[in-house]
Image 1 (spheres, rainbow, N blue to C red):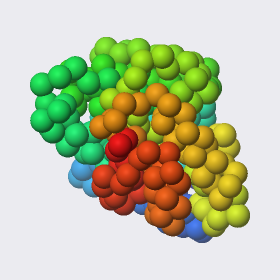
Image 2: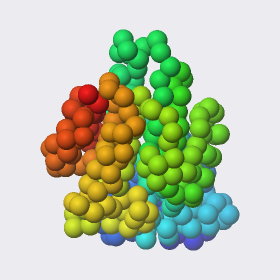
Image 3: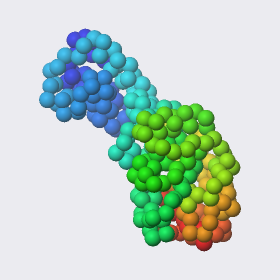
Length: 278
């Protein structure tokens, strides 16, 4: 990497080249994000001031970040945040990185809360396997009247979720438990982005840096989701919702399985299955 003195342009050119050689296709964006994070500027500043000299102290910090990215460590772990539904969530290696496709869960929740049976009533929502808390926290912030509980089996994940709840001023409950085992209420809505990846699937090498317990499940990736469906059947009332994220190739099998446990398909969009108890 460039030694002192280095300009914004010279660093970007050399760093981008190295990431591309490492087959990291987001090279340009990643390099710009590293610079904006350390220089504390917007991306537009980089292009408006290409000859700006980077100080030796800044350059050392920039190159430390860059070396991590060169090892294919995800940018969300390097920068310690990921944007989700317009908000920044703290992320570290204890939690799965929030994905854009998961945002559809929030849209489904908001739609349910506008229905006549839910519109003017107190609605309880439980986020199972909450991880960073991005789903449950966002649901609470988007629909403040929701009574939200975040749950995860990982104490380290709950530490991250609690931090994000405080940072984003979300008033909710947090509990430790394996799926629904410590949930005593009868939730109107259960949301869950549980591990659903089968180890035989092709996947990005970046996922090697994410917690395996948050990614992989047995039974073609469906074991934990099926267990949740069985538990939810005993807990939820008729008319309640179970909203799941899963790979589209799993949707038919999960819908059939859910039907055997008194759930029918309400809506299917992208990676999201919305099931209603009957």
